[in-house]
Figure 1 (cartoon, rainbow, N blue to C red):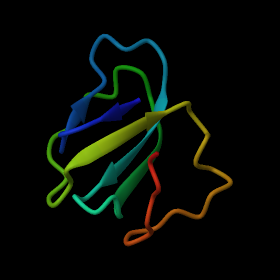
Figure 2: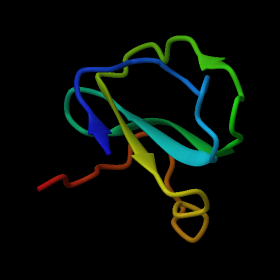
Figure 3: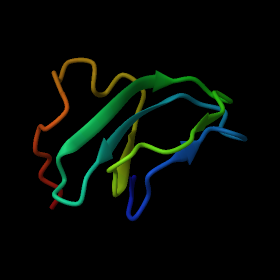
Length: 74
């Protein structure tokens, strides 16, 4: 799921883990959270982020995403 605009998320009431990729306005990676556990709490604010991709847990494990990488959403 792509949440746009968004610079923070919470895991309250979610009963499954996710991977979260925060992106800036140019869809460049700001931060990757792998396997955020259910009921983890809050990723308050990722400064400079404009959107977030919420993905199935483990889906970013085989991808070496790092800050500055470009993501094509289309």
